[in-house]
Length: 251
Image (tube, rainbow, N blue to C red):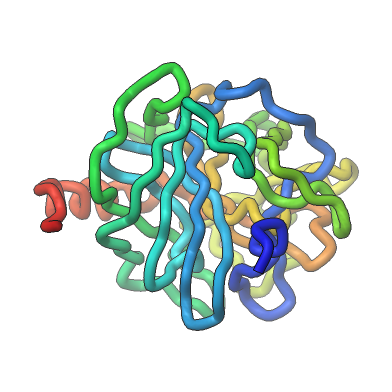
């Protein structure tokens, strides 16, 4: 299957479809050095997701991006080119949240332990995770990046970005029956044609330099708002999991 088609082949709850960057622009090369491109082999075939480096040996992504084998590429801008900045490895362990529900996409978060640590460069660098009790609020402006589609029939090989505004929880609870304000964030002004869409699942919502959310799901047409996993709610699990698997993978 051509790689461009892989960007459309990921799992979402019935009636959902988040993933591509709509209404954004091409990112300046390597301006998001934490971004990871995931190629996934599962029983359903090949697919692709986004992810983001949170430590030299761990990438955070969405639980619905799970597969038998996951190849992780860091330092990429054009995913169809062998750029000198790219570093590629495999996920030797994929740990989904134990309470992940594939029917509702609740607790849609997964940690990937990398087979080898990534070397920090200007094009490869981890992003900060939430600390303390501060949380994103309606009106906050954040950035999402990904290699997903630019529209229903528009595809790209290059990393794109878009600025999105955090919405009140009612904007998603009235639209999605399984929305949970404690573990999810409602993102994207419904009056603007800007959103994440097919292929961007697992990518980060970055607010003031901190990854606060993970692209999870939205509606089939990509009209905002969309639902993001609230990372802050899962930080105890994230820290516990990274400590548990801190030793290098056995080859």
